[in-house]
Length: 166
Length: 344
Image: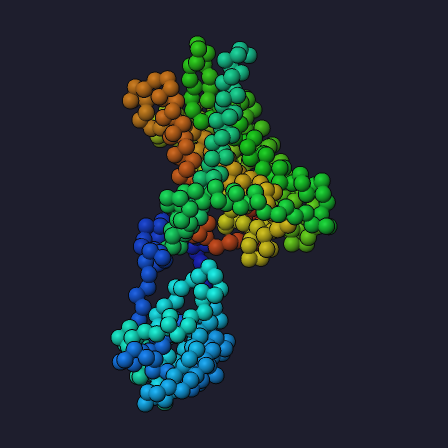
C-alpha cells in the first residue's frame, strides 16, 4: 500500500494562474497541428490482407468455379445469406453449383464461409463499398461472384497461414 | 430630431441588428470549426467551400423540426421564455459605440444607436432581464431536469451580476461618466491608455463574470450536456430552441463588445490618427477595428471552452460569492483611492 500525502499548495499555486496560461497556450498550438482525421472518401484506406469485404468464388484454371457445392459455407453462414443448388457435371470434380447466390444485404462479412470451405473456393474480397439503390441488385449470383485466383492472392496467402494455426 | 437623424437612427438599428444576426451565423460555424481544430479533427467541411454554408443547413434543419409543447408545460410562459432569453442581449447592443462619428448632410451622427448618458445603468438593468427568460423556461417546461437547470442558471447569473457590476463601477470611476461613449473616448489617447492597463484586476473579474453570465464553460453547469440533458432548454424544439441558441450567442457578442468598449478602447485603433484619414474611411476603419477586437474575444471564448474543466455548482457559487465579490469591492476601493489621490 502506498501512502500519498495530500499536497499543500502555496497561495499562488491555488490561484491556478500559471497552469491556466499554459493550458491556453496548449489549446492555441493544438489549433495549428496536423489533424488525425482521414478525409474519406477522398482519402481511402489501402486494403491489406486481413480486411474482409463480401465473399467471392475463386475460378479454376479453365474458368469454372472451384466450388463443389458441398454446402458447408451455407451451413456456417450466421445470417444465412448463401443459397446453393448443386448439380452433377461431367468434369473429374463431379459436382458444381447450379445456383450460388450470396445475399450481400444479409452478409455480415464475418468470414465463416471462408473458414468452412474445404476447397479454398470461397474467399473474402476487399470489396465493401457496393451500396445499391435496389435490393435486388444486392443479391450476387454466380456470374458476379467469380474472380480469378490472382485477384484474391493476398487473402489466400493470409488464410493459409492463419488457418494452419490449428 | 431632423429627418437626417431619424433616417440615421433607423439605418444604425438595421446595421447593428443585422450584424448581430450575421455574427450568430458566423459563430455557429466558427464554434464548430474552431472546436474541431483544437481537438485535432476537421469539423463541418462538406456543406459549401470549407463548410461555410453549414449555418444555413443548421437553420433550415431547426426551422423544419417538429415544434413540441409538453403536456405539463405552462403554455403562455413556455412560449414567452425564449423571447425573454433572447431580446435583452440585442437591447444591450444599443448602447455600445462602434465608431466615433460621421458627418452626413451637415449633421454629426454618432455611431452608437442610443447615446444615453445613463448608458451603463441601462446596460446592467437590461442584462438582468435575461435571467427571467431562463427562470421562466425552467419552470414552465414542466420537467424536473429543466427546473433544476433553470434554478441553477438563475442563481449563477444573479451571483455573477454583482461581480460584473463592481468591475464596471471601477471603470466608471476612471471615466466619471455613465455613458459608454465617454468611457471609450477616455481611452483614445493611445494604446497605453486603454483601461485594461489601468484596471487589470477589474478586467480579470469582468472576464470571469462574462463567462458566467453567458453560461459558457467553465460555468456551463446549467446546460451541462452530460448532467442535466440540456438543462433549462431540454423541452424546447425547433425555433424555440433556435432562439435560446441564438440568445446565447448574441449574449456572447454583447459581452465581448462590452469588454472591448470598457477595457480595450472600443473602436480605437492605435496609430490610426497618424494615417490622416477622414470621414467615412475613418469610421469604417474604426468599425473594422472594433469588429476585429470583438472577434478575437469570441475566439477566446471558444478556446477557453476546450481548455478548462467545468466548475461544480458549489465551486461556482463559492467562487462568485466568496472570492470574486470581495475582490471586486477591493478593486473599487483601490481605484477610488487612486482617483482621489490624482493618479488617474
